[in-house]
Amino acid sequence: MKVVVDPERCRGHARCLAIAPDAFEFLDDEDRTIVHDEAAAQAGIATLRAAQVECPERAITIETGEDDSA
Image 1 (cartoon, one colour):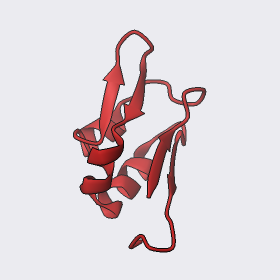
Image 2 (spheres, rainbow, N blue to C red; image 1 turned 120 degrees about the vertical axis):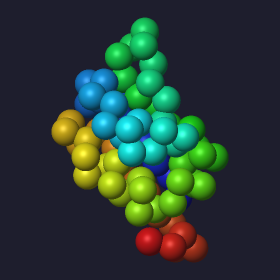
Image 3 (cartoon, rainbow, N blue to C red; image 1 turned 90 degrees about the vertical axis):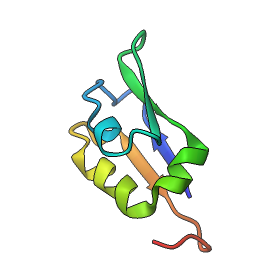
Image 4 (cartoon, rainbow, N blue to C red; image 1 turned 135 degrees about the horizontal axis):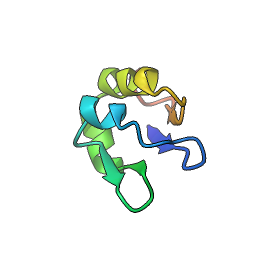
């Protein structure tokens, strides 16, 4: 599974951070969020999908592979 936050779309609402604080990090200097890949994998697909749905800018993409449980 790969989680990506599009830096062009993210506007720093940080709703993803509220839902999955271990999977995302807020960059104050850039006013946007990034993903911690290892922590995102441990957060679970349901939590990550909740963060994706809550993003008002639709900046989060979740790519699942064939061997990932979705």
